Image 1: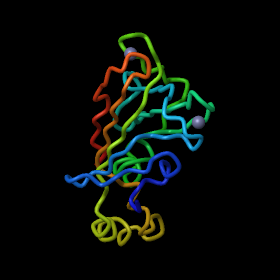
Image 2: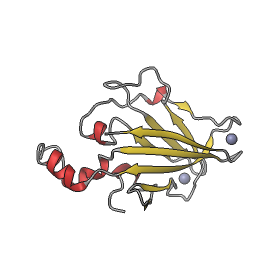
Image 3: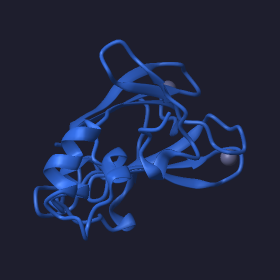
Length: 163
Ligand SMILES: [Zn+2]
Ligand SMILES: [Zn+2]
């Protein structure tokens, strides 16, 4: 899928849904689908001009770490407008299920930026800063659904407008 954001290419191979979103599970290159997830969702330093939402996933099987979203770099507001700074990884806390588990499967959905609109509004204005293919990083919405790997409970966790 050509509109997958660069930072997710190795771990996410989504399908296009009827409403124009890309949707798929996070799968580690090792094949692992269960992750320890950490985030700064409730950090006091989060906010416009301050820390963006940062979510990291560590593969339970091989230990590889991937960033699922850094609002400072991914999505239109962060990537094009630089509206946030990247949070210190030290501010991240484990995401926990009600059962106490910190191990989850994750499904990510993204609303891609329109390629033509990105060309007209961004690349044409700042040709030294942006390339046409960068539209993949300027998505306008991301949701993350989790399923606890221990008790099976599903959660519509993150629902973040990024444009
Ligand atoms: Zn792995
Ligand atoms: Zn659970």
